[in-house]
Amino acid sequence: MSTDGPRPGLDERAVLARQVTAALAAAGHTVATAESLTAGRLAAVLADAPGAGGVFLGGVVAYAAELKTGLLRVDAALVAEQGTVHPEVAAQMAEGVRGRTGATYGLATTGVAGPAPHDGRPVGTVHVAVSGPGGTRTACPEPPTDRPADVRAATVEAALRLLRDALRPDG
Image: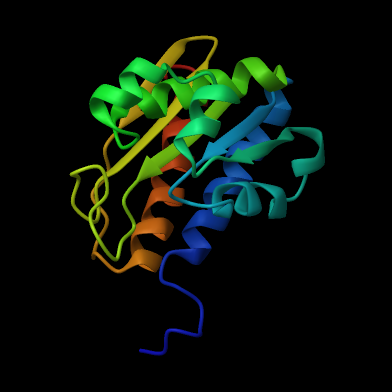
């Protein structure tokens, strides 16, 4: 398989982005992203969805721990103790971007895409979070491979699914 062509799941990510964009618009809600692992890919998929201009406020790519703690208000003691690859870090990133932007929902990603472990966590360790009116939820999806591109693609999809689930009436 060529590594230059479309990645598996690209259509699924686009479909999910359309679904969440439509749901956000119907409810009069907005979303903002806080990304580490996905390096802006989540924001790009959301921005590409029809109607995104009415619901997607923007995003922060915060690779450095200092940006997570300073800009997104992630607890520095948590980062010092657990590192940046932790479910509570993802939760605080989502809450931080939501607070900073005034979005109804904050959506965050953190983890290890590789090629080497980070903060003592193996490649493929992923944490996503959504923060909204109903609280904050996290998930730890398992990417299909440990290839960096696959880890990032699976993380974007998992984050969109988490947001979609939070937007459901029973969510």
